[in-house]
Length: 125
Image 1 (cartoon, helix red, strand yellow):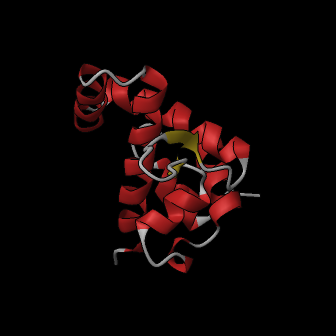
Image 2 (tube, rainbow, N blue to C red):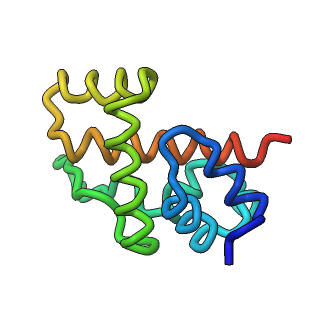
């Protein structure tokens, strides 16, 4: 179904994205230009942090429960590959780990930032 799809081909040319991730992104996101910002896309993908603050108490509660869980899982797995093999994303992941964040939180943050970058990349001429 995705053979010859220009969006899937463009996604597959990005480092770290294989055919499954490209097809998953295409199936779930469809057109990237339907989102005005990368932040909206990240929220759609379920990669935005959820806030559980009340009064003076400030707390995070993991990720929002929006979007397809398989899409979120594919993007977090992609983030682990990026942290391992891409210097730009490895630097962010290592900086978060040095600040005391667990690996899963660092991977989710990298996935969030990468999806925001992806929106810019896919909507730029």
